[in-house]
Image (cartoon, rainbow, N blue to C red; front, top):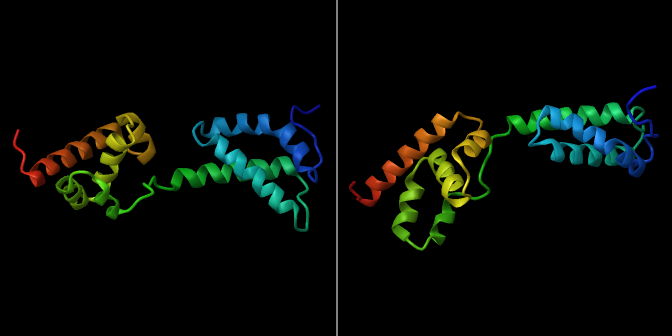
Length: 154
């Protein structure tokens, strides 16, 4: 007897009920941070796939493959802020806005994550898939450059 659920693949609600907990625990072994998104994507793909012939014969195998691909794709995708360089005009200090806009994109990203989103150095490193020392280095360079651009002395 297998430990895996044995529901028909042409009944998505039943599949979700039986497979969800098992698939989520599997996805968490691959990547705890991306697991829930990967499982949701897998079930959405299965439901979409069931609407056109031929039907999926092995729902469990299909879901596992989609989760694996989803996690791998999300690991390769670089983290990007949803805004461009022109969003700095909303800052109350126009000089600061212009100075930030002159920084390289990576430094802008790290400043935004650290001060705008209040993320820790460790969380930023994880999002950008770099070391914490790299984040500290970019942050220090960005702050030094901002000081130069704003004419501040220490």
